[in-house]
Length: 140
Image (cartoon, rainbow, N blue to C red; front, side, top):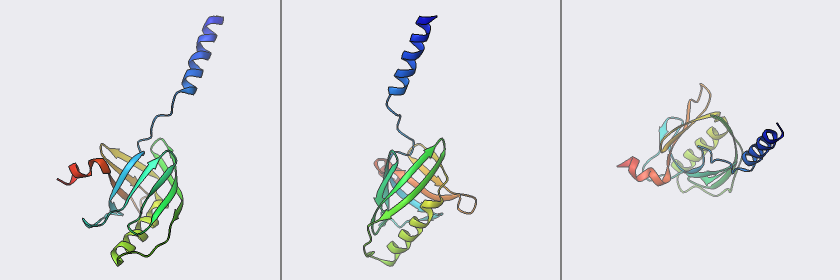
């Protein structure tokens, strides 16, 4: 009986000390669509997610945000950007759209090298993303 308890404690301790598995959200992502609208080929909006931190580029400015994930639900909050002038009106529009949808994201769906960040019924496809290392394959 005592040896079983010791084995159970050792197994529990080993599990608790095991490194956390990476989230399906982690990686470098290139935005392909914002709220159903595709970006032009020359427009680049991207970010990376590492643990609970998102860092990226809005098309105009660098930004950071906090990411909280549980199962297939996700929350993006505390979006902060370094404010600079946008190079074009299209870039400013895309930046405003991106910053508008990030806080409304509530869940996600991962499909291989693509990721959808989804909102409520009013904004079902907030963002459609592709892994940056797979982007060349997806556009050929």
